[in-house]
Structures are given as C-alpha cells and as structure tokens.
Amino acid sequence: MKAIVSHGVKDFRLEERALPDVGDHDVLVEVEYCGFCGTDVHMYHGTWKLNIGCTPGHEVSGIIREIGSKVKSVAPGDPVAVDPGITCGVCAYCQSSQPNLCVDRIGMYHYKGGGFAAYTCVPESQVYCLKEGTPLECGAFLEPASCCVHAADRADIKPGQTVAVLGGGAIGLMLMQLSVLSGATKVVVSEPQSIRRQLAIQLGAEQVIDPGQQNPVEEIKDITNGGVDVVFESAGIPVTVSQCFEVVKPGGKIILVGVNDPATRVEFSPYQVFRNELSVLGSLLSHDTYPRTLELISTETLKVQPLISHRLNLSKFHDALKMHEQQKGIKILISPKDK
Ligand SMILES: [Zn+2]
Ligand SMILES: [Zn+2]
Image (tube, rainbow, N blue to C red; front, side, top):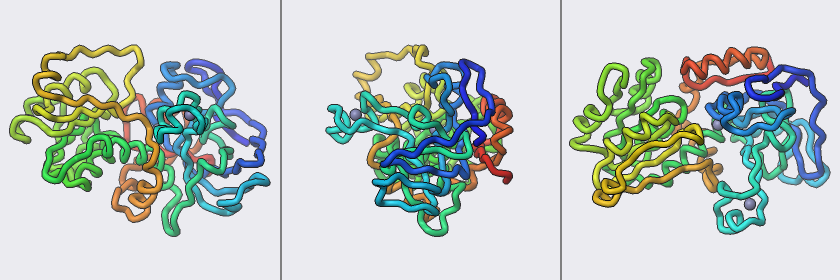
C-alpha cells in the first residue's frame, strides 16, 4: 500500500509499504480521509516526536475491511472514525478518568502506522461507527472536534458570557461555534486570513478582527466592554498567548489549546493572575468527549464541512505541508483515493 513514511526530520517520503498486520483485537481501516493538522507540521520539523519508519496522520475516517478474531463491536464494511490516542488503561491517570494524561499514551502513528496511508490498523476500542448519513469527510473531524469539545468543557462557558478566540483555523472555528452553542452572546475571533474571518462570521461569530490591520487587544476590549470571560488561544504562537493575558477580564479564564513549540517561553505577571483571580488552563486532547462529538457532527450542530478548504491526494502530501505552513486554506483533507 502507499504510505507517507518518516525518514527523519524534514524527510517524509511517499513509499510502498506492506499492509499492517491485524492483531486479535485490531481492526484494519481502509482510509478515506485523513485531516492535515498542525501537529503533523511539528512532526515534520522534529518539534513533536515521530519515530523513524512511522507513518504520521491521526484524524482518520474510513471503512473497516478486516477485523481481528476477538473483535465484537464492529464488522467489515462499517464506516468509522478513529480516536488516535491509545492509552495503557492501568496508570494512575487512566484509572482516574484522565486517560488524556496517560503516562504511556501512544498516538496511532506509533502503533501500526497513522492515516496518511491507504490503510491503517488500530485496536477495536479506538474506532467509532459513523451514524447513517454522516459523510466520511466529516468523520475525519472527530478527533480535532473532540479536542475542541474538551476545551469547551474546560472553559465551562455560562450563558451570556463573552468569548475571544485568538486564531481562526479549523480548531479556532470549532471553538467559536462551541462557544455560541454554550450560550456565549459575544464571540470575537482574531485571525489574519480573510477567508477564515469570513467563515467565522458565517458560522456565528459576532465580530472578527484582522490582527495584521487592527490591534486585537484594543478591539476585543472595545467590543466586549473591557475584556472577555473566556479566551481560547488556538494559534499556538507566543504573541497570541501574551494577548490572552491582556484581553481576559478579572475572574476570567485563559484556555491554551494551540500547540506551541515546547521550547517557547512567554512572560506573564503573577501579580495580575493573583489580583484578578485568573484561571490559566491547558486543554490536551480529550477523554470523554467522543460520543458527544459524534452527535454534534452527525446532527450538523457543529458544522465541520464548511471548514474543508482542500481535498488532496496522498501524493500531494508535501503540497499540503507547505500550504499548512503558509496558513493557506482552513482544513486540508488528504485521501489515498482520487477525489
Ligand atoms: Zn490533530
Ligand atoms: Zn495510562
């Protein structure tokens, strides 16, 4: 089968590979779509670990083609989306309902290979059957959308509150929608790309800001009468992390969702956090949000299809990488099939 394989930092190649072998508890999924994500760019540059010889890709939908001898809950032919985080089930975090913090968690790419391939193979416990009528291209959003639902849970938005989203890529645009769904009355998105800003308005943002032309801190304070109850950082860069501390109002929450370079350091005032009783929360992956997210996607309560800007063949993987780095488009889906 065709697969993207890591040969080291900045050296990913499209190669012919053997099909993964299907263990007793595994399912073989014929990949229909795999979403391109910021984490894949981090892996390419070596700021997020991907072992040599492994295939990246973790936002997968497809059809089950083969099941292991002990698999009971799914069958060949089932359309599924994949939870790529495989946890140990026995560490203190797994046993306290926090499997996203599992000390031995591995991504599916370190199991039997990720989704930038014709086939992938994961344990039965990692797949969710798509509801009838849910397009497979929407299924590829299950993982990133589940992370956003977890972030919304962390934010615990109350009806009538105000929210800012700094970074309007696919994650930011889902966080924006979830904020509206949670009852926020003013949701402001700051995003430099105009097509993303337009989409933010179409999908329910009250107002958008172009940080290239406007001062996002002043604008957000202006629009929300002095600051927001909740600010999501979804760009994963130091400048927007700093802005969070400036736009949040006393008593408010900062939720860090974007993946910063692990070496990044940002200054903040401990006095401000103390004096204003700020909450600064990280949001890593998800744990109990997959079933709810499946429901949100299949009912189109959370709209993911408008976020798809490109559908590219696996052979165009490096084009997708470049486009993502240049922040072109919104969500790029890769398919091993001609679309
Ligand atoms: Zn992702
Ligand atoms: Zn664990």
